[in-house]
Amino acid sequence: MQKIGSITIDDTYYPGKDLYSDGEIEDEMLDIAKNVPVSEYNRVIAERKSWAILYHFSNVRENIVQSMPITKEDSVLEIGAGCGAITSMKRSLINAYRHQEADNITIKVGNFQEVEQHLEKKYDVITLIGVFEYACSYIDSEQPYAEFLEIIKKHLTKDGRLILAIENKFGLKYWAGCREDHIATFFGGIEGYAKDSYVRTFSKNELAHMLEQAGFSEHTFYYPYPDYKLPEKIFSDEYLPHENELNVNQRCSSSMISATDQEEAIQAGISGVHFALDGITGKMIAFHRTEGADYSINYVPEDVNLICNQEKTVPPEWITGNGSDIGQAFIDYALPLIQGIVNVPEENGLPKFAYRK
Image (cartoon, rainbow, N blue to C red; front, top):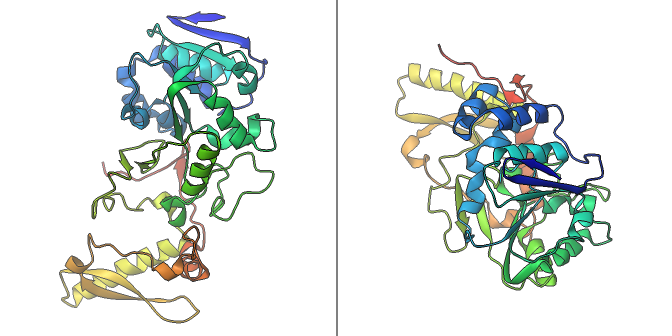
């Protein structure tokens, strides 16, 4: 047992070896947790320019649970608490120093299956924030995800609630060209994980089926935007985005572009200058894709008022009949757009931008 402030760290079942770590950056994070007040976290995030520090110390992460019906009287079990932004030994220390003034927290360090056997009470709320996808790595079973949910179910009170946050393997960002969050490949989850993959995410229908099979007959889906890691908004089936509500956060980061994107952006700028010199104003440069198997586009001026804040939907015939996958027509359309890799300058794991002084 260790005591840090009012926090107790129970290391009874700690095997003496951390199975998950972000590496040397965790030493830096521990120093921040020890020596920087919470009110200064945003300043440190801006100065360090590190994704790990942003991810673990941003108060935006708290949004994922702030809207959930959790009261001060509820007993809460957070599985995989990590650094406490929302647990190896070092991560547990970071967690403890961050919350050392709280007198109602005990941190248990160890492998889940070992710690779980010695939980002595049932909980009103159990959270799995970015944890469920790794069940195949720490649940020794032929059906690790189903068994994980069954184990959790038995540790909930009669009216207890499970809060589970995980990426949707069919998430929009993956269709837009983002790499799969865990294995860093394009369309890695959409096309199906390798049999020996240490991680796995699911579609909405797959999750619903697993929850029902485990006895969670009542469940509600929420949709964090842009994702559950740093959610700015949280939608639900009762409150879906209004028209144009998502347009303000378009895919505009240079760290995500393909070589095709870069070349077309340059050509669009060149075309814009030529049209302006010809006296054409009040227009925007649009891409008109030519028909045929070979990919090519024309750059043409179009009325900006007819395009901006307008929505273009995916044609239904590009989606498979059961509505759970894309068809060949979509692949034929999208594949030319993601060709080529642009080497974006980086600093501390983040894109390095030029600033005007």
